[in-house]
Image (cartoon, rainbow, N blue to C red; front, side, top):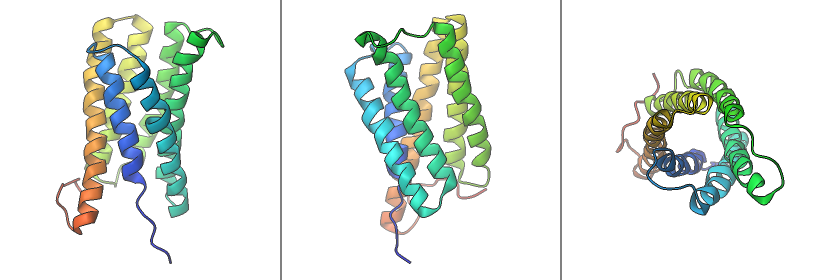
Length: 186
């Protein structure tokens, strides 16, 4: 049987770095621009889809579902932001964006349940992502700028937790031992 590389660090980095950048914006620290959108389309989007397809090859249904779904999340989010600026479609009303985010939150809740029995850092990534989607949905429903900023800071934590897990998997595999702990299977 051929040994396949672990695609999870690629997907986790695409997710983590893009999540940190977008949520620095959500926290009100800098405006939304081409840097975040390009990152969302290519690294958060395309790289995660590639990682998901590689997880399929490894027979990992969880990894396939998570990475391809969140990769396409990033692509659709960029589309929702860019299409109206190009005049292709009208922007959804802010409240409707709440439903988009709430549906992703429901999906993430079930994916979080799927992390039970996996490492603790992965559980934290999905729990914090579920909270992030909930906060963003409520922010879009209520228009609360302070809740949006809170969501931004929570999202930065979520993104950095994914970056940590990605680097722990790379470094631990490279060294053949645990250098960065991830709280092995529960």
